[in-house]
Amino acid sequence: MAKFAVVFLLALAAISMLQTLAMAANGRGGHHYNNKNLYGPGSLKSYQCPSQCTRRCGRTQYHKPCMFFCQKCCSKCLCVPPGYYGNKAVCPCYNNWKTKEGGPKCP
Image 1 (cartoon, one colour):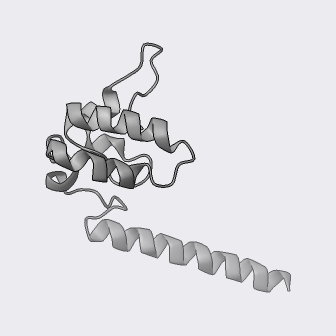
Image 2 (cartoon, rainbow, N blue to C red):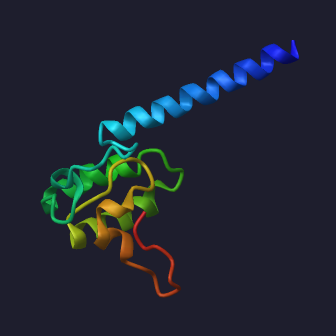
């Protein structure tokens, strides 16, 4: 039984490595948001901010403050990062706007 467990774990590790190599060979490298036209600075019009912030804040329990700050950041930066959290690097303005205390202003 122990030999089976070791062989199984080695097989899983090998499959994981092959998948990583295949993604790197395709140029993706695991990063799905390379299209700067869709998510980069200035990619939105101001009228698109409410719908993009609704998407961005859709899974948080702090919906009202998330929407407030997201719309404030969107109107200034004209972009909202993809996904529900993280991915801020695709929008430097959104990522680098800080509070007085030095924390992130944009959700």
